Length: 239
Image 1 (cartoon, rainbow, N blue to C red):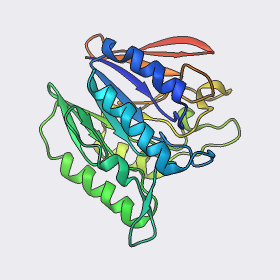
Image 2: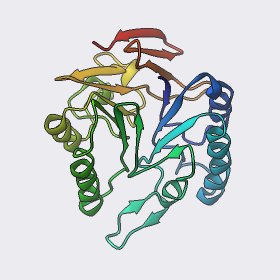
Image 3: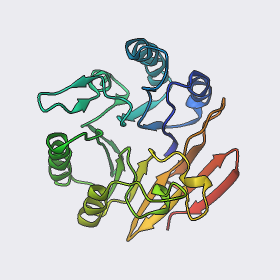
Image 4: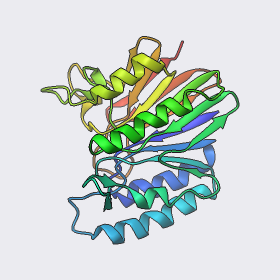
């Protein structure tokens, strides 16, 4: 199983174009949140329409897993919390989104939405509880925010991670977590694209402007992760 992992593309269409070209080389593509750009001059409804087309093209070439990030909310629920309903509506064949899961052999891969308040946080908590009861040999999470107090959540000045994720990692001990959110973590002193918390590997490929996004290539057979960016390439054995 060979996986391409990116995050925080923020409506950079040339980066989506690059992913389309690469797609057939991989068994699965993970986009770990923040597909939209709420600071863009392009209306969100237009961004959503365009990205729907990109994602539909991607799923024709390979399996696609997408979680929402803090830029992706398009509707507020009754508790005044943003939800990415447009991503939830993308649950077609060969594409898996917020709240769903997929099996890669004996590996369970769970996809979690961005939580924007106490209600949506409890929705995520219930997903952890229910999917932890499923049968699997290893568990992989797709979750936009990185854990707190980790090199993958370091901005260069402070950690901006999700402490709730730390608690969930401690409780459920997944094999891997693919995140994003903190763009600069891999490029800062004391920051990194990878970390190991107990037995759990956590990743953040980072984000920047350009035609080619920083990205991870994860080979589950060789248990190896590669990080590629304008800063160079690094490798990590996951044993």
